Each structure stands twice: as structure tokens, then as C-alpha cells.
Length: 135
Image (cartoon, rainbow, N blue to C red; front, side, top):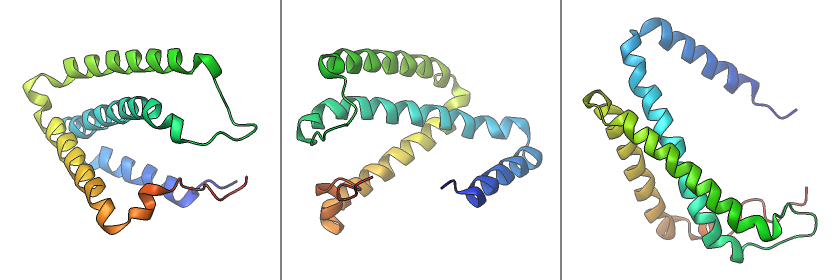
């Protein structure tokens, strides 16, 4: 097994310590932020996949949806948009301002990192991770 046991135990321990040390209302903000960010990441992945799919190589034995690829992508995008709409309802109250600011800050920081990639590590943008590895 290649499970990172020490890292998993560390995250569990930190989570337990935070639950005991912080009042219940303080945990609501990171929980809300951690709900918003994955939905945005999933949506971005679903939008970007059809855009780059033609450039990705196909190897024998790879998983392939064939003609159903586009309908599945459209359904996944529709589902993600519904999830984002539900999250919008969640974050519109005034109490959700801090999680929205946290997510916006993370998106800005990630965007700046991505914009810096062509300057500092161009090769990472032009190669697929693990492309030379035969599993």
C-alpha cells in the first residue's frame, strides 16, 4: 500500500484538536470555504477537459467513453452548475462573507501562481505529469 499514513493521522489529529479548541461557530467558516472550493475546481476541470482532450494522446487500454464523452461532459457540467447554484444560496447570507473572501483569496493566489509558471517553470506546463511512466 502506498497510503501516506503519517499524513493521514496528522490531519485527523489536527482536526480533532481544532474541534476541541475552537468554538462551534469558528469552524463554520472553514467548513463553508472547503465546500465552495471543490465545486469550483470540479467545474473548472469539467470545462477544461473538452478544451484539451484533443491534445491528449490516447493509448491502447485507456478508459474511453467513445461517443458518450460529450453527453457525459455536458451532464457533468450541468450537475456542477446546479451544485454551484446551491452553494450560491449557501454563501449569500452576510455570515458567509469570510469563507467567500478566503476562497477568492485562494483563487487569486492560484491564478498568480499559474501566471508565473511560464516564467519560472515552463516545462511543467508543456508536459503531462507521469507521461514517461509505464504502469
